[in-house]
Image 1 (cartoon, helix red, strand yellow):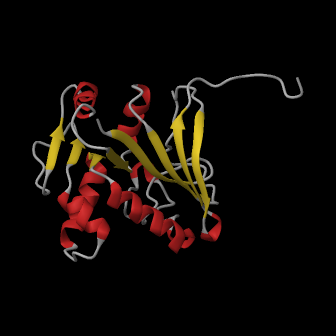
Image 2: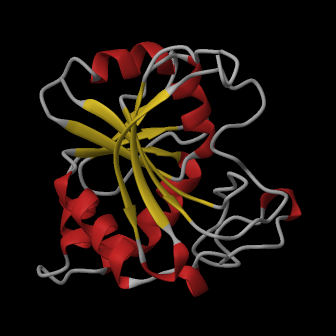
Length: 204
């Protein structure tokens, strides 16, 4: 049964919108597209590549699918591990508007999305990874369908934009599986759900 792994590039205030460029996602008049670029380095690039190469499949929202499918099929270098993984492995696309998906090995998920995702978790495989896809992440969170978070957190605050943990987030504790400080002040975290938060008074 494949685990669902959430990957996200985040600012310190939890914004994940349009890290890659000004034109990536300007929804809501977001003025900070491309915030990740000046803060990227080799350390996190290696971790991103390793994670994508290790995925058995990918779970994408419609907007992320549109971005990926317009770029990655053009990268045909067999020595590019990201392109090889994305172009060859299964893509599960959650969308209300698409009627078909043409990228190689893509499958459309419509209707009762939660039920379809629960079926997906019963199929063979180790991991299905998400990238971007904010609306899909909110759905996964509300229905307890996330097995692990892999978060790339950068030392910048933006104050606005789509967030990984938005309004209505269910309180939850996490276990820190791994944390890796990287170049340019960023940090990579692997976290697994750890049940409900515990509360107490410091010093008791």
